[in-house]
Amino acid sequence: MRALLFLISFTFHFPLHAKQIQFSLVPDREDIIQYEIELWKSDELGEEIPFRVLANPGPIHLFIPDGYEFFRIRAVAKRKVRGFWTELYQVALFSKKPKPVAKPVEKIPVKTDVLVPIPTKEGKPELFLTTNLITIVPTLADKKIRIQYRINGSPWQTTTSPLLRFSKDGNYRLEYKVTNELGVSDGMQVWEFKVDTRPPETSISFLSPSFQKNGTTFISPKNGLLLRSSDEGSGLSNIRYRTSCGDEQVSEYQIWLETSWKEILSGCEKNIRLEISAVDRLGNEEVPKQIFIQSLKKAE
Image 1 (cartoon, one colour):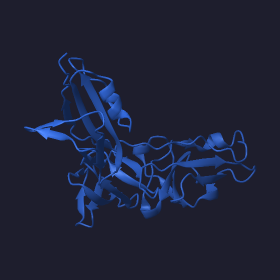
Image 2: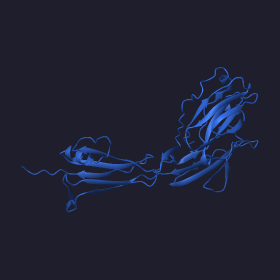
Image 3: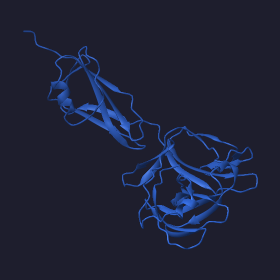
Image 4: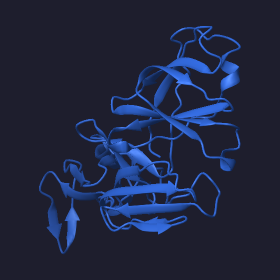
């Protein structure tokens, strides 16, 4: 799921207990309020039901029941937003060599092709969907697994692997839980995110009054070009442009700056074709707007 980053620092004191280890859970974000720890008897995750433990950030004494040889951890943020599981840690390896005190494991960035966090104007991250389809696939490959889900408080639906489509822009709350044939569930999962499929919109105008005749606008280098772009979804990322001078091939896209207009006019004495498009922070790109500038030279 979504990016929840955290650090895990391990410290050990011996002897404690043959099946007890001590370490610290160090949040990498302020909104992380809890951690889920799963204990596994083997590294074949599809063949058993794990033993689950909840822990708060900070030092923890983890008791490992007999027969359980592996464990993994994931962070839980506010509103029950859960991160991805870490890799499986082998319990037996921790008793061989104590690790240095307060030396954190390298940060594990949690990335996803489904949800991405984008900061708001206030600096708070919001989750945005990067595709209009979400498929909930259980970790355990069992035909008897059932998934209950609902969207924005709608009636609960039950299926084995729901394919959910989000075609309209807006705010969404997806709740779901996975239950096996014994009625054991991994707990309610909650995703709160936004859908943004609309690209920005750009308006184009000249700063100084231009001269028009028979439907043709005449400008000089003194007529500055003003671009205004707005985006109501994830927010504006940048305005891009590319040009072609005369019969030359079109250039690569560049970022629009205050000096771009003057550079375009001074860099070509032939006819100029200018394409302008804005891009939001989710990657939605506006259909390019085109301006054709015909060079008029006085006859010698």
